[in-house]
Image 1 (cartoon, rainbow, N blue to C red):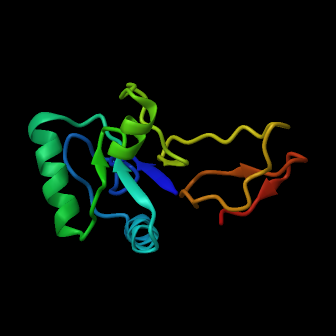
Image 2: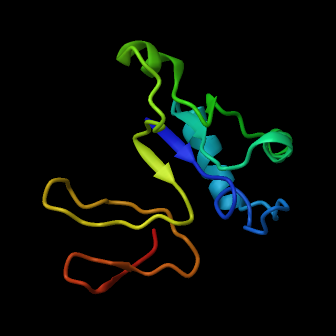
Length: 129
């Protein structure tokens, strides 16, 4: 399992360009997934000094990344290139929007985001899991 994880609004509260308080529930989830063998990619628009500060903040939180704004080395080697789009099995972002389709099974679990309403297949409000 490969996760691409956003920073502002996801790992921390969004007060860009500052770094907000940690979102401990997300941090705990990411750390547990990595401990279980998942690969974690930091997927953020921050660059330069802001990215350096972000990485220092993440290190202080005990978060370890397998890649930063880049594809995993094994995927680059397997595909013979490094496309601009970061490949992941799951993308964790405060701006996610799930669009149910017939081509895939409905998601069994969703990361609970404050203030976000999820609808089930009948359009009824579903719980944030």
